[in-house]
Image (cartoon, rainbow, N blue to C red; front, top):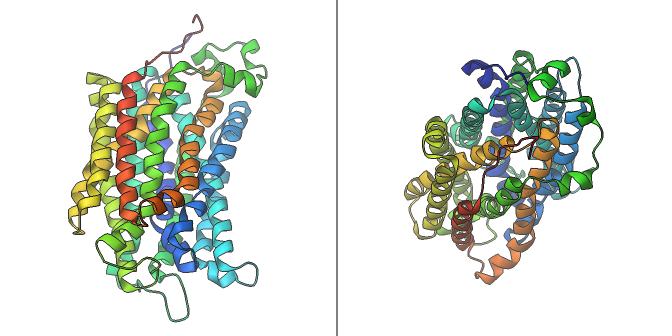
Length: 442
């Protein structure tokens, strides 16, 4: 088996650069979906149901895209055609969603917004899944930590931009409250326009600067024979799931259950806990200031995540992936839990340090552990199946969110405390992971 070539820093950078734009769009969605849907008429108890669009789309789409891209060889590559297609649809959905109220003749604004959210999430998943597999395809085992760490760095950089956009636009003089008779603030609308454009441009950069290994070269690097390329049933794939993937699934469940609660409830939690708004308020200046500040603190945790990503690969190589993953998740859980007690908007910045460290680890460590344990010819489909460990916990959180909020007396900030506890459980679960490197002899 020939050894994969050692890639330059810029080769690794370019293959993940499109994820920068994808994450700008994804962060705009995370930071503003509750804000938009509340403005269109949703009450806080029902917000988690709308957020189910993302994990449901990922649960269905990513395994299909992974399996399809494993079998696809075109002049543009095997993963890149899917990346481009998903980016085009994502950008269109981003242009339409904040303008949902203007399509009332087609559907009620809230339903049109929910439909655009579903379309956006589906296409985001079409784009994101191949990026994970692309790094697994291209980098050698020696460069695996740095490959996924650079991807985490770019994801966090995109998250900073996407999270800060409404705040920056407000500072530049764009109105942060809806015009008379309208529902969504212009800052949000223009931020989504910018995000859609950035998504397209960065994905095109990756597409034109990255050369995927052609079939014969890929087979040579991974010691693939013709019989290994035959069709394998989906049930067989599930039966042969690597043990490392199953162990990571438990950690992933509590990690993403935690993140989902954070994304859904931070805006109403901070509006009520810091700006003293009343439940159901979705258009006041205080609510919209809280919405902008959520963008700021989400950007802050992404900055902390980006900084940690710079050193994470070196730390993982020196101390091992498990200790770094464990420590990062515990830090994230403590940061989230501390938000329950913070009444000052600037105090929330300190809470974001732990969240950022955890976020960087969640974006890189599971994939570095997993990709080493996967057969190369099934990299895409297993990465797609692994996405179920992200989507199922979010679906669970979405279905239970309203009930949990009611049990906690309707106080959205307590949902952030629950989010922190879930992240701590995820950290403890890392202890039980046993890493295995894939070998045909096993």
